[in-house]
Image (cartoon, rainbow, N blue to C red; front, side, top):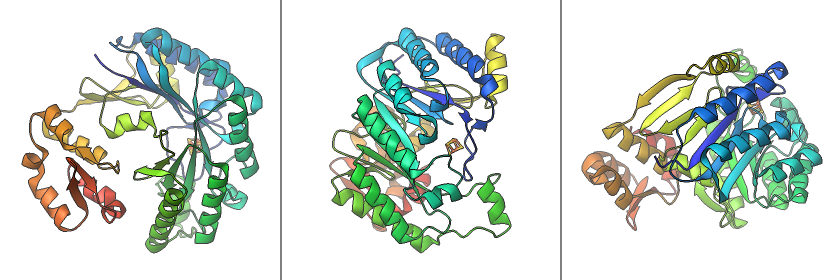
Length: 375
Ligand code: SF4
C-alpha cells in the first residue's frame, strides 16, 4: 500500500473562537496525557506502508497546547511505524497564544520543519471580536521565534469578511503580512456556522457581516496584493513563494491517500474514506479497550471517486491533469463530464489548456459552484 501522508488531529484549545465549529474542546487538560497514549496506540495499530511518508501534518484544535515533548513523542511514533523521509514536509499548526521561544525551538529540534501559524488578523480589536486568545504582537513574536529557531518554511492563516471589517483594515492586515514575508499564506473567508457564538448572534441579528460585494472586493484585493508581491496563487485560497506550496494539502487536492489519526480525524486509504469518533473521551476509551475508533467509513468508487477528483483538482489554479485522470480511471474526463465541461467553458468559467482543465479567473469567484457540479 502506497500512502505518503499522515494527518494528526489534536482536538484541544485554550478557548473556543467565536466562529469555530471544528472538533476542538477547551478546558480538557485532564485528557492530554491519555490522549497522547491513545494516539500512539492508534498509530501503532495502522497497517505499515510501502514507502516512507513524504508529509506529516499536525492540526487541530491547537496542537501547540500540548507540551513539545508530547508532540515529539507522537512524531517519533509515526517515524517508527512508517518512516518519515529526510525531505518530508512536517507541519505543526501553532496558535500564537500557546507558544514561546523555547517551545518553538523544541518543536524544530523534534523534527517539525514547517510552522503554520494562526494569525487571522493584524488588528487587535478584530482578534478580540472574533474570540482569539492572542494579540497581534504575540503573533509577530511567534513568527520571529520561528525564524530564530530555524524554521525556514512558515505559513500564516488570515481571515477576511469578519464582522465590521473594512476594506482598509483588510489591506492593513495584508500589508503587515507582506512585511513579515512568510513563505505561505492561507486565506479563510468567514462562514458563520450554526452552534457557534457568531451563529447565535446572527440568529438574533446582532452581527454585522460584510455583504457579498465587499467579500469579493476583499478576495480580489488579496489576490492582487499577494501576487504583486511575488506569491504564486496556486489554490483558490492559498498563496506561496516559489517552491513553498503546501505539499500536504496538495495530497488532498489531488485526491490521494492519507492516514488520519486522532479524534474526529478523517483519512482516505485504499479507496475508503473514514472518520474517527469525534469525542476525545470515547476515542481514548475505545483505544485503551483495544476497540476500533472509526465511526464511519465509505468506499469511494467509480463516478463518485471521479467527481471528487475533479471537484478537488479544480481548486488548484494549475487545474486537473487530464492525462493523469485518464490513466487513473481508464476513461477520458470528457466522456464522463462532457455536459458540465461544455456548460462551464461556454460560460467562461472553465478552460482547457495544456492537457489540463482549470478555472478561469472569472471561474475562480464561483469555484465552489463549478466544482460541486461534478459531484
Ligand atoms: S484555535 Fe482554531 S480550532 Fe481552536 S477554537 Fe480557535 S479556530 Fe477553533
